[in-house]
Length: 221
Image (tube, rainbow, N blue to C red):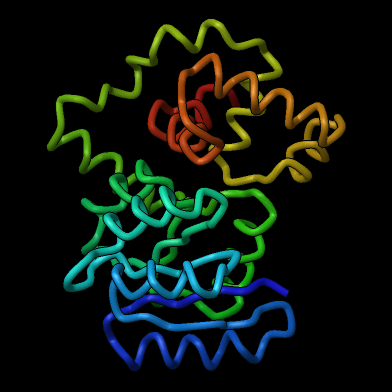
């Protein structure tokens, strides 16, 4: 059973979502919080597997909450709850270690499947929204390169590592990548570790962001 905490400043949202998710045999809601500060205190007490975190909240928002949670509990997974109006904050949340994001109006089945995906090592990056997030980020920051300006580090990757990177960008976990490429999960894990080191990034979520950000999922098809 996957233990989760729901964090949202709107009682109707967190309680309603908590009620729906508690009906699922594979999920146990072990706590609820109204902001990032409460989430940190509760997470340190309950040690959940995953936190569903609203991105806009008073006192401490989801971006700052994710950063502190990842510092204090490195193994915890954070899945952001967002709306289309939150797109400018999504990239920052992913940079702080969030494993993906969901729109609040998605179905319960989609939310449950996303929780399962993240719990088993995948990332959740809804394609259309991701494209919007990155497009807006490029407009407002000179740090984000154009898609055709892929860092030269990509040349250090083998063909297989590039294939794995593409699939990470599609949100696949190790088992799904292994099945797609007809290799073992252990081999996938090695490829992921190698490409993370070569690209000088932090983890598989950052690898997925890299793949989407630079169009890897497009030009390797």
